[in-house]
Amino acid sequence: MKLNRSVWGWMFYDFANSAFTTIIVSVVYSAYFMNNVVGGSEGYGEMLWGRAIGISMTLMALTAPILGAVADHSRGKKRLLFLNCWLTVIFTALLWFVKPGDIFIGMLFFIIANFGFNSANVFYDAFLPEVSTPETVGKISGYGWAFGYVGGLVSLVVSLWLLKINVRLIFPMIALHHFVFSLFTLFWLKELKLPSQRTNYLKVGFSRVWWSIRHIRKLPQLSRYIVSYFIYNDGITTVIAFAAIYGIKRFEMTTQNMIVYFILAQFTSMIGALFFGMLTDRTDTKTSLSISLLLWIGVVVWAFFCKSAFEYYFVGLLAGLAIGSSQANSRTMLSQLTPLDKQAEFFGFYTLTGRLSSILGPILYGWIAFKTNDLRWSVLSIIVFFIVGWGILQTVSLSRGIDQAKQLNKTLTQ
Image (cartoon, rainbow, N blue to C red):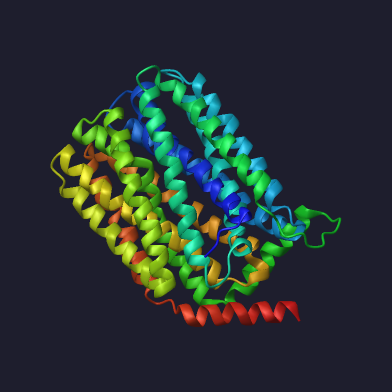
């Protein structure tokens, strides 16, 4: 399968924005916020970090369906992608000014940056059907995630060097990384030029979201999948937000140790995205995703019983394999179960459920940590999300869901 310039442009956004997830959300800024900005009693930093994640996801969830509908109607996905991208870049760079004790701006700048990051992904994900075919969607989605992990790896290596100079230098560096490599997307990714019309896009956005709410009943398999995703994604988001904090607090690992930890995990993440992308095309998305969620259950159980920092490195390798596979397959499955002409709109619902689900897990994790002073119980709480999400996923019929999406699309275009 030949990758044209537009596909490469699409994948470069994964390369650009993975640095934000890896460094800001997962490894360096989360640890900096906990240890340098907040400090204080055991569990207090975890509680505030969980709330910062929850607030940003709530704001994002409230706007995502409207933005998705507006992008679909105005054919302005690329423009809105970059407005949110640059919002992320600006407020990530501003994290340089967050110093010990600056809890308010430390949370505020992160909340805005994380809001922009997740909002941009609504439009980025909605480009997947335009840069792929039904036969190649699994591979291209997997390639995008794998290339993104390469971007995360580059940012980790540079951060490891900057950590020796000044940890706060890492934050504007990540902003620069995000900006520079997103330019490939800006210039290479082609958006389908379809007729647009002058109208009140906000009004249209609300009306089309309401249309989606009424018509999703005609897509029962998609509805079941979204419920499953709502639950298991909460577990994934919580792991991403607290993996480094868990290693630092429980095993007394340093930020430098955690950067190395995530460098190693990037390799298995790339393997997971590539292997499970190919497995998806050889079998089906549901089978591949189900295996991924079983891996996540293993990660949580192992983390709970883990006894040393050395053993925790191996937990990270398995988590990398799980995250690479589950994220790529989640995006692919939604694309398969939605009508082609409503992709941006339904990706808004996908993002809505994903971000709403991202509220409970981090807040619950932080609350349990604060109440028990034992992070193991916080980690164990995550397993519920993966078990229940996996169970609901087994009730989804992928073939029937694809047929339902095609039928609704045919009805809409008649």
